Image (cartoon, rainbow, N blue to C red; front, top):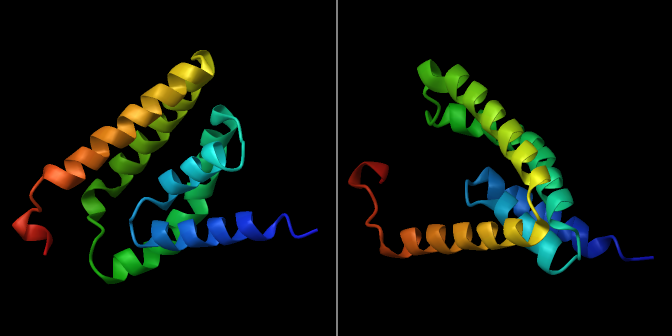
Length: 124
């Protein structure tokens, strides 16, 4: 009866983290595949759908704080949609094990970059 509480809490927490730009969608993907037993392809599809409302709700705060560069907004949206569609199509053609290994390698590379890359002085 209470099987929905943990997924709801994880979804809410990752939604808040997504709003702050922390990468809540990636955390949600890890939760779904490692702890909830969701198949990798389905989890990635859910993650794509999850990002849309999370990003939409964070958008007013980013506009208010001046983090949106309007001249590049439409090209970025177009490129993001095209790349998401292409990656979703490619993921359906791959074996799940290869997909998991590639995602794990991606997380390792991003983690190492976060650990060993100096922050840009302009971002402060």
